[in-house]
Image (cartoon, rainbow, N blue to C red; front, side, top):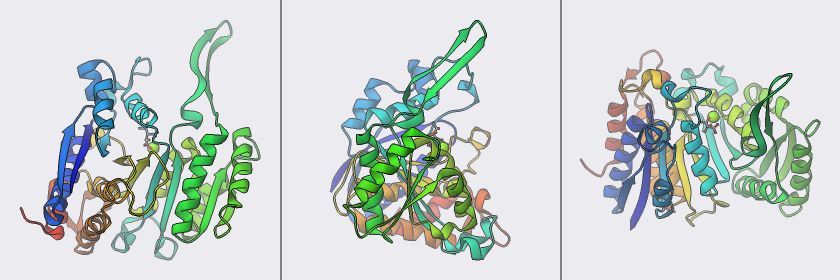
Length: 366
Ligand code: IPM
Ligand code: MG
C-alpha cells in the first residue's frame, strides 16, 4: 500500500532521532511491500528562524493532506527568552489543537532487558506495562483567560483550567475503550477534592461507566496517583487524565521504563480501534535535548517506537508495527544501548548505530 507521511523533525536532537525513525519506517516498507511517501516540513525554532512563526499554515495544510505526522521535538535555549512573542512550543501546541488531536496515548512499558537501567528495585518495576491517556487540546494549557499584565500593585498572571462536557466525555471514552481492549481496569485521575473541572470530570466518568459495565472504573486523586505510580506501578494498566496532569505524570512514569528516550506517543483525532486507521501525530515524549544535540548520542528508540505506533493506529499495519517493536526488543536483548540506558557489561552505541541494529533486525535489506 501507499501512504503519505508528513515529517517534522523540529529542533535539537529532533532531526537526529527522526532520521532513525524514517530509516526504520523505510526498512519496514521494503520488507512488507509498502510505499511511504515523505513530506518534510518545519516546526518549532527552525520555523521561527525562517518564517517568524513556530508553525505555518502551509505546514499545517501539508500535514492535513497526509495520512499521519511524525514529529521530532521542538525548542532550545536560542528561543527561550520569556519575553519572546513566539515560542517553539507554540508550534507543537498549535498543531495538536489545529488538527484536533485530543487523545494522547503514552504507553509506559519496561522492556525486561532494561530493568537495570531504571533506578527501581526489580520487584517494583518488573512487568510495568501501562498506557497513560492524556487529554491534549484542553485544560490548563488552552483555557482562557491566559495572560500576564501589570497592575498598580505589581504584575499578575493567569492561566485557566477549563473543560466542556464534550471534551471530557470524548477523552474518557478513549480511556474506557483502551481499558476494554486490555485488562478492563481504568483509573481516572483528577483533583476532585479541590477543582470544579475535576468534579465534572469525575461525574462524567461515573455516567460513562454505565456504558462500560465490563470495565472497572477507579478514581484517584492526582497527588495520590503520583505516589502510586512509583510505589506500585504495576497496579496501573490504563489511566486517563487532563492535559497538565498527563504532562507531569508521564515524565515521572518514564523513569519506570529506564529513560525518557524509551517512551513513544500517539496523538489521535478520535477513538483508536483495531484495524481501522485514524489520523494521528507521533512523537517521542522527550524534548529537543539541546545539550546533547549534534553528537550522535541521543536515544532514537522512542521515535522508532512512535513509528510503530503510527503503523498500528493510523495506517492499520499491525504486523508491521509488531515487527518494529520486536526488533527494538531484540536490539535491547542483544545488549545494545545508548548512553541514557547504559548499564554495566552492555554495548554502548550512537544514535545511528542503534538505528542500524533495529533496521538489521527487521530485515528487508539495505
Ligand atoms: C510534552 C512536552 C510539551 C507539553 C511541551 C514541549 C510543550 O512537554 O509533549 O510532554 O507540555 O505538552
Ligand atoms: Mg512533557
